Image 1 (cartoon, rainbow, N blue to C red):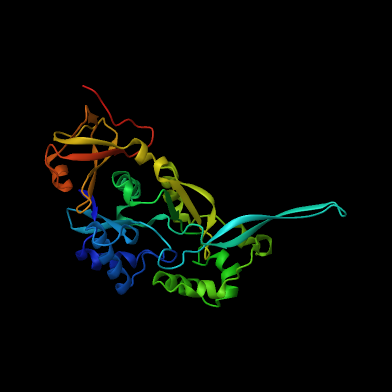
Image 2 (image 1 turned 30 degrees about the vertical axis):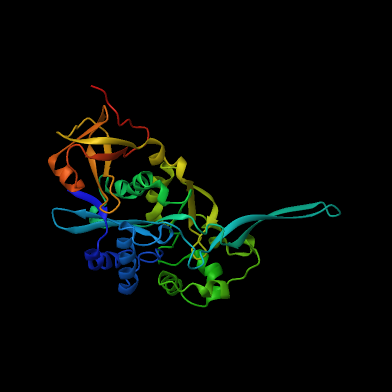
Length: 346
C-alpha cells in the first residue's frame, strides 16, 4: 500500500536519487546533497514545531510500504521571500495614445515584482514514473490541501504555486532564450541551478527594473508566457480543481504561470470533515476518500474507499496502522474528486 507521511531525516538519500529524475525547471528539488539535506532538516524541525511558523517548510513523501521505496514528494512552504527576495513578473498594460494622430495602442508589459512575498507556497511535486498510474498523482497533489485544512492557522491567506514553464523538445526555454539570456549571459540550466541553491542576488543586479514590452520579444517567447511545461498540464488542472487560479504573474526565467488561491476558498478548507476512525471493511461503492490523522508531529494520510457515516469512517486494520491511529481517534476526510459526497447515513 501507499501512504503519504511527513518526511524524516532518513529520507535524504532516496530523495536525492529521486531528484536526479526531476529535470530542469523545478528549483526546489535539485539533486544537491547540501541543499536537500538542509531542507529536510528544516522540514523535520517544522513538523516538530521547533522553528518559527513563518520559517517552516513542510515536506511530504509518498512511500510504497511493500518495498519501502519513495514513490513521490510534495511540499508546502509556510512563507516565501522573507529571508531572500522572491521575484516574479507581473503582466501589466501600458496605453499610448495621440488624439492628433488618432492612434491608441495598448501593450502588454512585464514588471519585475515582489508582490507575492510572504505567501504560502505549494511546491516540489514529483511522482516517480513507475507510480504514475491510477489515483497516485492526483492524491499526492491534493494531499497538501487537506494538510492546510487541518492546520490552516499555520499558513497565510494567500496560497501560491509556481508552475514549470514551457520548454521545447530539446529542453530549451523559448522565453529565457528570448529575454533572460540577454541579461544573464549563461545557459538556462545554470541560472536554474543558482536559484535552487539560494543564489538570487544576481537577479536584482542584472535584470532591468523598468517595464519590458512583451511585443519586443521574439514570437516564440511571447507565445509561451503563462504556459506550462507539457508534463505539468495535469498538475495545473488538479490545482485549479481545488480553487487555485492564474492572475497574471509568471516566473522570471521560463514564464510559467503562478497560480493563486485564498486559503478560505480552497475546496479542502470548505468541504473537508472531521470524523471518528472506526475499524471496518472497505466500501467498494464509495468514492475515493483522502483520510489523514490530525497530528502535526506525525502527519500521515491514506486513500481509502470509505464513507463518512454519521460522523464515523470505517477503515481497515492496515489503513489504521498506516495512519498510526486507533479506533476512536479523530481523522480528517475529503473526497478525492470534486462534486462527490463523502457522507452516508444508515
